[in-house]
Length: 122
Figure 1 (spheres, rainbow, N blue to C red):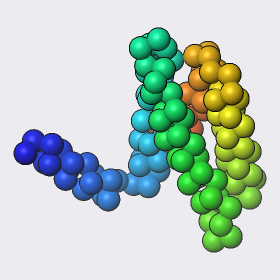
Figure 2 (figure 1 turned 45 degrees about the horizontal axis):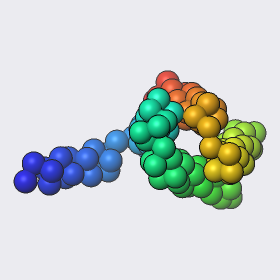
Figure 3 (figure 1 turned 120 degrees about the horizontal axis):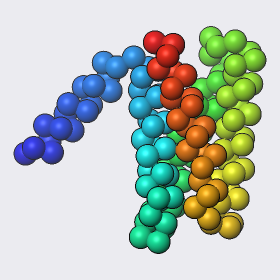
Figure 4 (figure 1 turned 30 degrees about the vertical axis):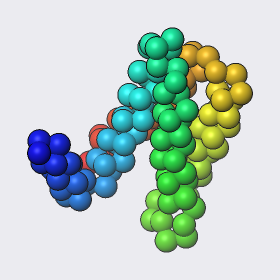
């Protein structure tokens, strides 16, 4: 029963939160998942693929969003987000080919910095 209440609260919060806050929250969630794998590599290495997949899917949404003609962001900002997305996709493939905990740091840092920037503009 407790889980249902928490899930309902989370759904309500997501629908009432500012879109930038939701994006920042999702980026932080992805960073936390990646950081957990990095911090306890031996025990959590099995979680690597799901953490990378969550992060990649999140970035697919961001890149798809900025690619839309009706997106109101300035062209240079859209290009920067698209370039970061390409980096994330390529770096993710590199991690999958040669998994090492240190390789997660760039993805974690990008997510945290973007989330911080989104929150400062609210």
